[in-house]
Length: 150
Image (cartoon, rainbow, N blue to C red; front, side, top):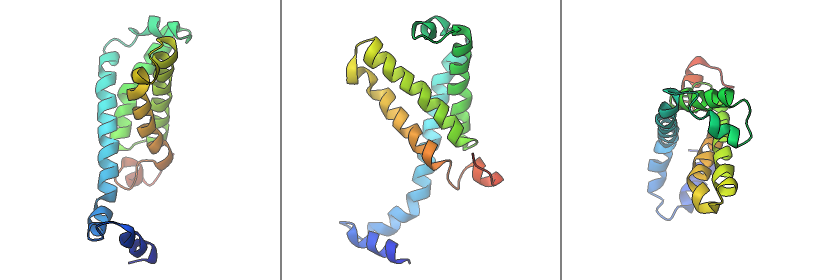
């Protein structure tokens, strides 16, 4: 056991939980990545069946041509979600998803005038994806298995 692990254990209110927390560290991160990716894929599955269906909406946000951005949004959510879930090209997939979510924050907060209450869910999801932009897929990912990460 390293000195930093020993110090971390001593700082816990229940030091006996230190071993459990250390043992579940990677697994909990993997579960968060998989759940975020699966949920993003489910959300994107509604768009991938009609990839140009959001063209008018994205043009209303100032993204022209709407057909291109609608298709990109559908692919980002659906395929990017799959990539995040399995940990393949995790950082770029998470970045693209985070960017899309920050646009929805703008849409709900500013365009729709809903403020924090309208943007809260998108902010939370953007923060989760930001975590994976920085951390990558971890050792339980396709990126780690192939020995390459973006």
